[in-house]
Image 1: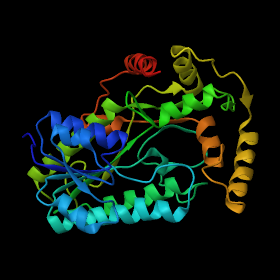
Image 2: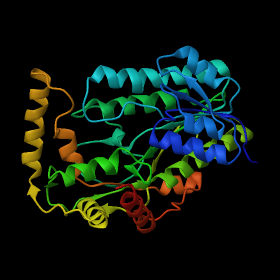
Image 3: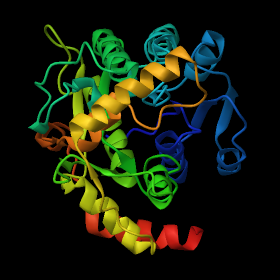
Length: 344
């Protein structure tokens, strides 16, 4: 049975949340979004914008009133910043969303998590959802997202079914963060290959990420129809799923493919992981002690992420959600290069 209920999206000013809102509006769904700034583009498409953030419990309750699904996409991202900020937004903010869902009687919650919740500082090659959540990392992002995921899983029950999605390195036309930032650093001559340069990663096209969110919502809707039985709800309720393109790439080869595509010099210089990691530690200390504005040009977390394998087994998402990446790496990369050329 199709689900056409109204939805509430947090984080609609971001890449994933915005594209999700557009997709739902195009499908004729009633969409309400939470944002800290005006979103005229989404309003023109028919979205109702509620001004507020994840600290604003009254705004969250207004957003949740009368909807069938909440997509909690908002969060503090990044590799630098006070741990308290990540905890406030990612942990306390998620608790506030869950509370608002319960108060309003929302039956479904889809949470946008991150594969970094299983960060362990080493290669992650083909790992699945049995990997333990991380409890320590060189920055607060992974641990705060892991804590938030626990809140979402713990909230799952007869009245509110929940699921967490872990999309990895989301990219595509409209991305203002991942690919543009890497390309800007490369063009400025500030990027070097860390380690061997042969590490494989999963990167995920935005269209596939949006599709995964819609499939997760439908799976939870099915859970609601079947009903809560025994010690837990059927299907996907309370679970987490890795979401990727299912085509791991050699990270530095893919970055150089993009650079060639836009007519920029490829990255050829190397630095060892040990050197990059040590440099990151020193820079982090300087940024804390002095303190300096912005974020360090290298951190320990970034050094590890850029030099180790990070690709994941998506069999569970294929099985439970019916997820199948629709936009391939080849098609998505060609589309992105065309977009970048036009935007230059």
